[in-house]
Length: 252
Image 1 (cartoon, rainbow, N blue to C red):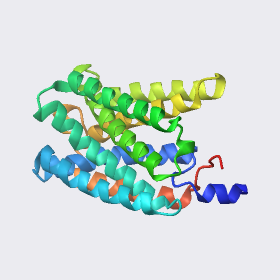
Image 2: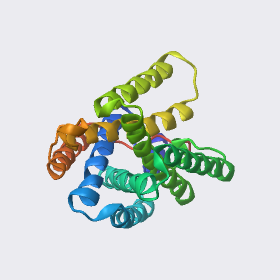
Image 3: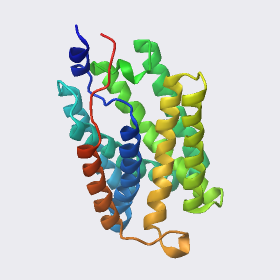
């Protein structure tokens, strides 16, 4: 099977700079979009979670049924996972009363358990192996847990650490810079670096999203949540169209 045909088997994008730009925008939209439904629309975290999880499950179904990589479908599924992650994390840390520390520990355990089950079942947790339904299910479960964990970590750092939303964004941006340096200058597992970066882009987006829409007296800019969500959505669409979008290259 030649290289082009192998690429057609992939339904996740190549991990490029464009991938990370869209991912950060999507995680920021997830924060503002999740807060729009649960707070601005006063539906609460539980109803918001039910809505976004339903949308996420439908999109995952379409993603698994698809025969090849579709950029708009893939990123719509990512956005659904990050909005669901926002409301799920807020429900766990606030409505369930386990706090940011308890929620972060619980969700970290879920991410590690998902990765361990994936590794034991299929032998690898590399995104380069995501080319069949079983691997896709593990992929999306892990991503959803990581999005939820990222929300809790962002809130924990901003609120508990007294850094504020802008300060938390700087912290997670610096951590991502360290991962980038390790990628280029050290022989560190690419799989480990990918999942670490994937998790850390979520609290970065959460902090930026909160900085945009939280009230001034809470350290935010008090932008309209629906408006911020719409602007971020347009930015993501523009990036999908303008930035190269191709399927990842997987072993045959």
